Length: 417
Image (tube, rainbow, N blue to C red; front, side, top):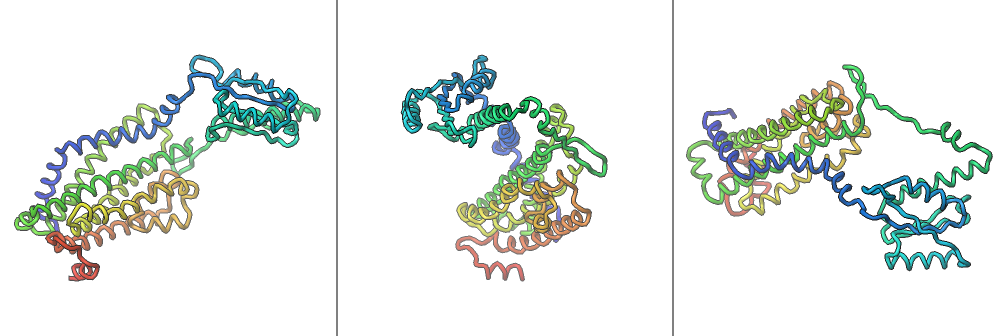
């Protein structure tokens, strides 16, 4: 198989026709906007959903130790936008009632929405450290964690005082350590952390997934449309199936390269303006090489699948499993960052459909041995050649096939022919 002038003309036509479409232009700007929204959206949503009025917490303190200190603590924060305390304490007295009766009355107040939540501190809490939080919404982790931490500190301080120890001195002696993370490489040391390393890996994973899904689906859809409209028969009369296949792969690849370059430009501007100098960019060019090779690999796979499909439904069904395979590394990304040189990850790195994604997760954290990088690149390049050759065999016959879907035996005969 060799590149011809006709293949380049097909590639030029595919590129020009696709780059002028509204969907491409919209996706060019919409994709980084969506990724930026994913990055800052949760923080903006958190600020938007903040309460505008103080939340009332009914507190029964059977110890007589917790209530006053907790109330004083909540006056200093957290605060609302207007400077008022976010939480307001409503004292609950026993008034001759037992604990079960108090809880029943608190539950009634919760069901009437008279209070936001209730905190029950039984008399034995000073020894057991067991306190009860009651609410209609027990998924408010922020409030629950804050109350748990502050009540625990109050009880611990009380017990230290009763033991004859100075709580402030104990706090100084047991103060938590401020751990500074320093990434060590052949170039020296630099201060970096989990968010920088994981963030860079995640950006590359998401970009590759978007590229494969959008460009791959575009490639399959164009072939299905040409088959259903019989346009492919006219194209085959003007050039060979091999030229048409290579032209389509090159055209879609050039389209993808334009997208990547544009997104990279935006990313570079953001890195410079945001002063993200601690991003682990040592292996950025190697990651981009894996990105290009992975895209070429999947483009060849999509060509083979697209040539077998006669309808949109068949195309979606065939590419659905491939889509799940592309998304698999995103699922295990967090676990991979904990142990980037795990033998399982090393093995996955040598499997062509996952090679680039695995390297995206490993390279920003710690540079793998040279033999792993060289082996994975060699395997990926040989896989691209093999898949392209197989795709050419399938494309040559499948692109003209309409009607019933070919069986596996027929596909194997096309490959062997």
